[in-house]
Length: 126
Length: 106
Image 1: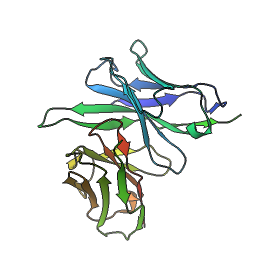
Image 2: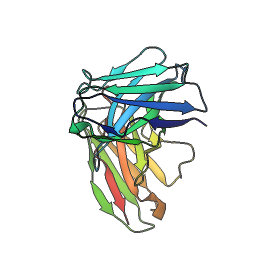
Image 3: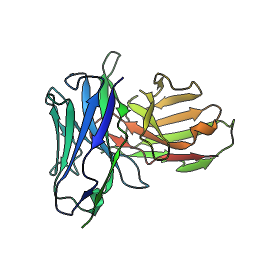
Image 4: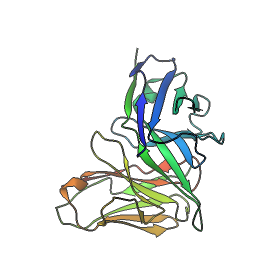
C-alpha cells in the first residue's frame, strides 16, 4: 500500500526557508488522480491545510501563505516538496504530507486525504 | 474561507456510550464533508468522506450524517480505542478548512 514519509530539518532560524520532502512508496506520484498535499498543526491546535500540487500542474495554496509557499513534484524521485520562505515562530508546527483523492464517480465530486505521513516537527527558533 | 465550527470542543463519555459530535459550516457545503480521527502523537486518519461514506477498514460503529451546513459524526458504542480528537473537513471549496476538533475522553 502507499506510504508517505516526511523528511527535513527540525529546526529553522527565523527569516530563513523551511524545506521539507515527502517520499512516496508503494505507488507512483505521477498519477492525475491524486493531489499531493501539505497540512500542518501547531502544538495543541487544529489542522491547517497548506496546499497541494498534482501532475497536471494544478497548484493551490491557502491565501494566508500564498506569497511564501511552493509545493512541487519530483517524479524522478517519486517525492514532493514544501518550501516556505521567511519563516517566523508562527510557522512552528508538525507538518504532514498526505495524498489527496478527488473522486468524481458519483453525482458530485468529493475529496479526502488518505494516507498521511507520520508528520515531522519543525521549530522556528534562533 | 469557510469556517467550520465543531461542538463540543471536548467530551467525556463511558465505554458503550453513544457519542455525537457536530460540525457546522459558515455556508452551505452540500455533502462535501469528511471526518478524521487523530490519536495522541499520531497522524490523522480518514474515517468518513462525503458525509456518510465509511473508509475501508473503519468500524461500523462510526457513522456520519447531515447536509448543507450541519453535520454529525456518531459513535454508536464508544470503545476504549476511540479515545482521540476528531476533526471535520470541508472540501466544498478552497482553501479547504478543518474544524477546531473535538477531544473524546473516557
